[in-house]
Length: 113
Length: 112
Image (cartoon, rainbow over all chains, first blue to last red; front, side, top):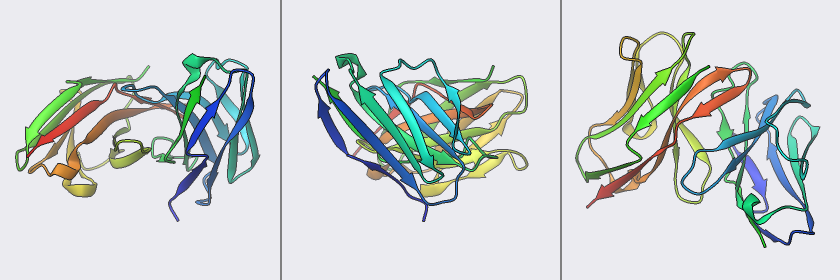
C-alpha cells in the first residue's frame, strides 16, 4: 500500500470557524509533512514530523496547528484563517532516511471566505 | 543551501515529439535530485530520482533524466510525448534536514 489519504477533499470555511485536515499513511513511514500550495506555485513546506515529534516548523502562523497522534496519522487544525490561506494543502510521508522520496496525498482544497 | 532552477515555466510540444524539461541545481554537497509530476487537482507523484551511481536514471511513464555534474543539470526527457503527459513537472533537490526544495514548476502542454 503506497497510498497517502487526505480528508476532506474540499473544505470551505469562514474566518471564525475551526476545522481540521486529516492525513493517513500505512507504509510505515516515520516522517510526515504538511505543504501549502497556491495556484501555479510549487509546494511550500509548513511542518515536518519525525517519529511523531515536530522537527520543522517553517515559521507558520499559529492559526495552523499540526498534530501527530500516532505514526500513521497527521492532522492540521485550522482556526481563524484568513482568505489568503486559501490553497491546496498537501500531506506527504517518507522513510526517515530518504526524505526526498516523498509520497503525496491528493490534497485538501481549502477556501476561506 | 541547495536550490533548483527550472528554465521555462511553460513548455509546449506536439504529440509524438521529444519532451525536454530543464533543471539546474546548486548544491554544496553531492545532491539528491528528483522529478515530480502533478496532474490537475492531484498531489505530486515521484517520476524518478538520482541519489548515487548511474547518472542516467529511468522513471515511470517513459521519462528519464541525466545527472551532469559538470553542467549542474538534471534535465528530464521523454522521446515521444503523449497527451496524457500534460501536467506540471517539478524538479526538486534534497536539501538535507528533512527538507526538499522544489523548483517553480514547468507546465507541459501537449498539442495533438
